[in-house]
Each structure stands twice: as structure tokens, then as C-alpha cells.
Length: 137
Image (cartoon, rainbow, N blue to C red):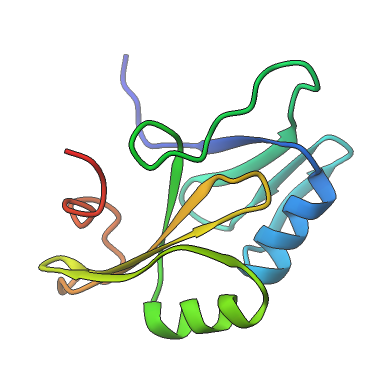
């Protein structure tokens, strides 16, 4: 096997319209492709793909210790948190500062955790290596 990169992060969501509003309107991810039961968000790197959740399967995704957390790199975590708070987004954990940078965690409509990370390292677009200390060991 020769994996080149992560292609998609798929989220099963209870309400596709509500999740589209959250990720597109509130977070600002552009819509790359939209069908009736599938929406791809983003322009480069891995896409965030939303699809309807099962009506019968148990939903679990709101644990930072063993659930799903999506990480977004941001230019200024303080202003991002302030903006999202004003828009009514739930802040799960306010800003924490570590050697690698600043981090806050918000909650989406399906109770998935979203990490907002402002790196301190030189390469501000770096997507790996900066989350140590913000997630469980």
C-alpha cells in the first residue's frame, strides 16, 4: 500500500442543512461539490465530506479522549473564537497555550469537536506535529 495523502474526512451528520450552515457559513469552508446526500467542503488538501447519519445507529463523537476531533489551522485563534462565540457557536474549551501554539475547541451541531490551532512554528501551514499537548497521549 502506498498512501499519498488523506483525501477526505467523512462526517455522518443528523441534519445536512444545519451542518452545511455550520461548516460553510459559520466556519467559512467553501463548497467544492454538493449533491442531495453528500457535500464536499474545502479547496486543497483533505476535503471535509458531510453525509446523512443513520437514523438507527447510535451516534457518538463528542469525546476528546476517544471520539472524533477535526483540526483546523487558523491565523488568529483569539479572533476566531470571538467571532464564533458571537455567532452562537459552543466553545468546548477556551484558548490554551502550549509550546507549539494556541488551541481552542468548539462543538459542531452533531457534537463533533473542532480544534482551532494557531501554530507558533515558522511554517504556519504545517498540519502535523503541532497538536502534541492538545490531544490525549
